[in-house]
Length: 167
Image (cartoon, rainbow, N blue to C red):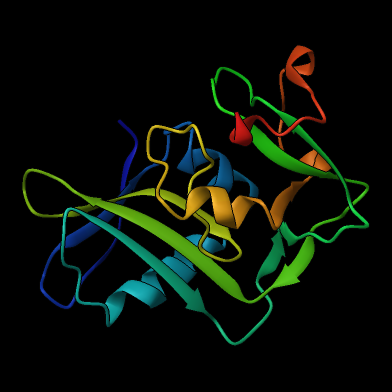
């Protein structure tokens, strides 16, 4: 495991990331500067609970987000990401937009420390409908938001204009 300790929380808990993780490792590989921002966020945070989500406005532009708010003018399609069985909502011909926000997901381990399981530039968003971690907010949120077209590798045979969330 590529365990990298980022910082210690105000309660003395280690906060670390597995740099070889396929989820968070991809985001950190594209934006390594967010490790420093995660450290800034965690220093004053009181981490409680099994799973923690933190959305932080840094007050400065830190990169681009792939999550966009959609309108009736957007061309939308759905597709499954590589090696996954749920559908993403994708906005065609949209581009990433500058963001000041960083979202970090953490999970408490058996030693009561926290592992960063995901981190991305942009707003906190619920999982997609159909994902194992989907919430009651997932469907409503993803009816008005989408990922920009080139931000994800998708299974081309699964591309559809029909919303699979309404089935």
